[in-house]
Image (cartoon, rainbow, N blue to C red; front, top):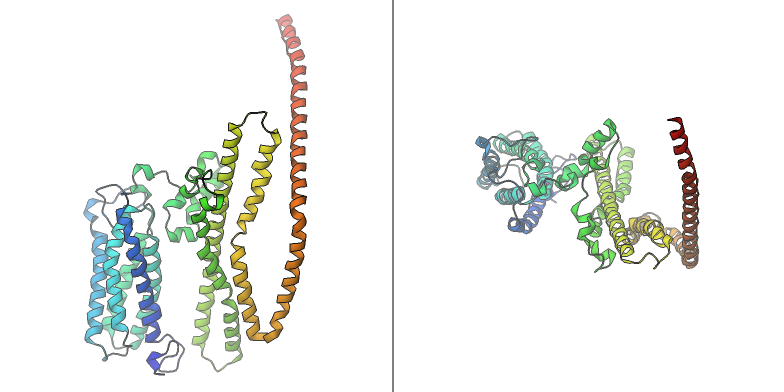
Length: 466
């Protein structure tokens, strides 16, 4: 294989990214993905306007005030300058193909990068004016390609003789950094009045939500004083029960979009989790072989950082989406029970029935809903784990499979008695609620009788004293 066609080892034999890797994995693939997703996202232009009119289309404001009108087209020009630099890079690679130490994919990479710049102009305008939160697509694309461009720029500067293209790419990195800062800035100060009361989560960008930055204001308030009902933000619109048609559809169907939102982070979490065995194996082989260069160790260090960082972020997103789903179910069920109870006569059902439905039954459903994604994720993870064990142990990997089958069969046998036992448990709870309510009512009647005797006597004593 030619040195430039390799992905990891360069022509000098050192451990590093090759031009082929940089052009395909770090260049063409992210750009093509962005074009594919961004073209579908342009339907956003048909949505109603979310920001105030007369505001510059590309800029994000500073804190609580609009920027001066003289900066109206500053960020438009910045993105336009970025696109122009991409065009210059494209022309440079087209004119110098074969003259510089680079792969033949450099021109193709420059073409799709230039198309990304053109599409970025239209998408950024649509996202800024038609969305209440910073653009997730643009933020993710610019963040990752910013890191990828740093790798490519490093390679070009280390080449030592093509400073022109290295300088152009470094300039695009600086501009991308400014554009990223603009795109991730929250737009709440310039939103229309009907969108000003949205929850902080609804108006926060992907970066703020990935590290739960939007909770900082609530945390600061909680540290400063005791929280009140007015301190808590509005719930996300998608979890508002008024938008859930629980009386017309089943609970799962009514919350299907919230449920499906946790699928992607759960898959990402499983992917990062099962990347660790390969990293451990590679790290062990590197430490056992002193002849391998330190560059391999630095590469493994970066891989460990990416895996653990990705695992933490995907885990946070997964549990956030899961408990948003649980919250939506709880709100829908409690609202349905409350509405149904108000429609019934006071003598139509026992007093403890609604109370037990509101508490115990709803809690049981929500506890089950929190682990609902494990029904499809666990078989995938188990199959992957068995495959990895089989690669290392052969047929001996089937031993834990038999243990798991026996344990599952035992749990299924025990599950036959859970339904009957839980019914008895629920009846016991209803009986306890009835007894407690009766005792409290009796205490109330006794206190009232005592007060009816005590108050007139005290009133007579006060009159005598006066």
